[in-house]
Length: 220
Image (cartoon, rainbow, N blue to C red; front, side, top):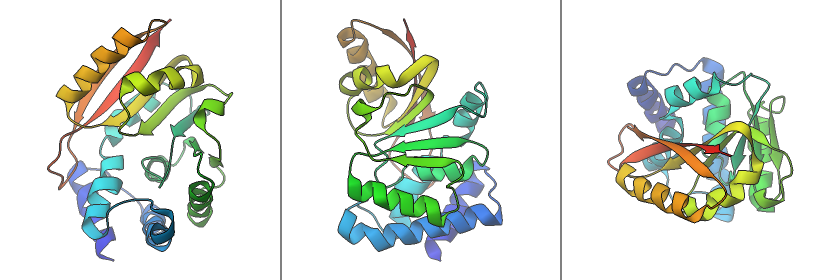
């Protein structure tokens, strides 16, 4: 499979090692994307662009996330909001073999797709899919991830009730200078919390566009 070869080349550039089982899981996930994409509209990319813009984009901040995750016990669940087509959550669940994840997705069709992927990839023992809008979630999590185009000022107020004390939000974003403007708007609009923010520039193999990972913690 050419897509799997491209993913492997990207991993090599990122100096990330996957074992044979992890590559099998990635291949299974790719096949499920192709099977369901025509009806579920999961992603707007195929072939190498699918791998670059979604799979490698999801895994690119691996070492930054690994360092963050190390601050929290392995029993802490990583909560991914609006998981949609499984990015970054399914890729991260495959990469971090000892970590537990919960994937929140409000679309029933996409939640069913995610559950199919989790089952076929043999991730049921540590990955759960919840078909619900994340504003309805009552649990609180130490680690929250999301990958979306929504401005931070419009989404962080909704995420705040889900974030446990001492927790961290990891947001996949674009250009760091644009993100800085979002951060400024966030701290102007949120009257309850002051957010401590780190912006890490990310290099995604074979991708021309700038990417960044925004790490947010709130001061109560």
